Length: 229
Image (tube, rainbow, N blue to C red; front, side, top):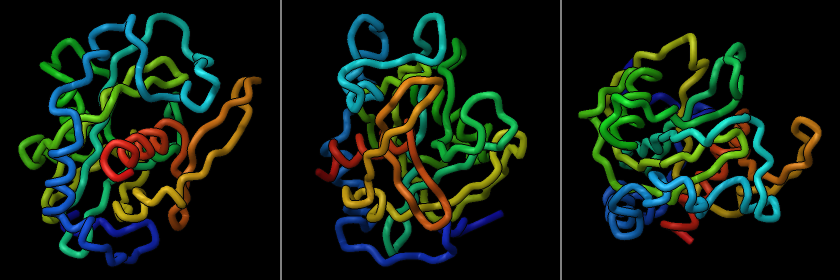
């Protein structure tokens, strides 16, 4: 599979100059963190962003045991008619977060030299794009999830010509959403649901036939707040 993946609705939306690739790169380099957030290596320091922000400062953890380190890649595609973000939809049979829209990413392992290395490794494993195709732009603040992860979001850019090799066991679909759409706060809904008997507040974003919610929508909101708000 090469070239344009296609948006969730099969169309490409025009975007203002603010979302042209060069403008996105410049703004990201000005406003993103240049190094991984210090809280990543200090579990005693609370995460700045996370599920607790919308839940009265508390997190109802679904997973027992110590908090786990993780990293995700926010892959921005430098398309001439407006940058997009690559997202995946997880397969329905996975034990954790089945069927949900996600960024490529996963646990930071001992073999990973850094959160960046972990995010790029996971991206290659999930959708087949090698690390050397990405231009790292910076980091978002640490995001803590109710499922027991402290996540380092890594932002990187890739040119429009790339090949996918999808791991069909983990990834059911790969699609792109215009960055201009995701960075519009009008598209960020605050919703409430009951999870394992607990009432939780979370962000949700609808695009065509895809619903982005929970941690993924929360990280998108964090990107908006740091770079575009």
